[in-house]
Length: 117
Image (cartoon, rainbow, N blue to C red; front, side, top):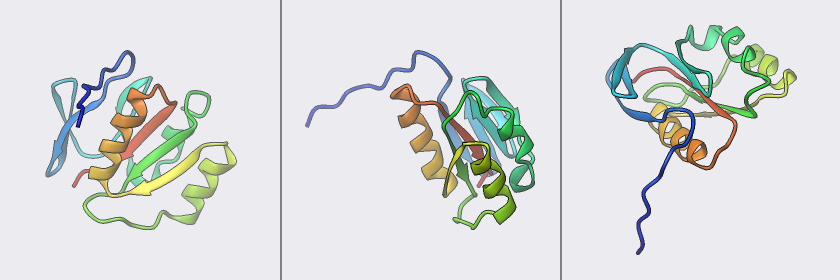
């Protein structure tokens, strides 16, 4: 098996996460975050589609990490994002972190809206 190190030429990947926090670029951020090519901001959770809508011209898909367990999104939240042309993928936060880093390394136009575990 050949192992290749992933390199990131643009936006910053997620370094790690734990109970109540995320580590990005060596800095710890508490609570829910929204991460994209524009940078990292605090996110208001599943009631905050506005912050994601601001990224509509920059992203094709948002990965929504719903914490330790996968949850259904509020129908209006999903509908609002999809109406703006943003694809929505829902998964547990650990999976969303890994997927974000992989898509980022491929140069994809992706954002991650993450609820901490």
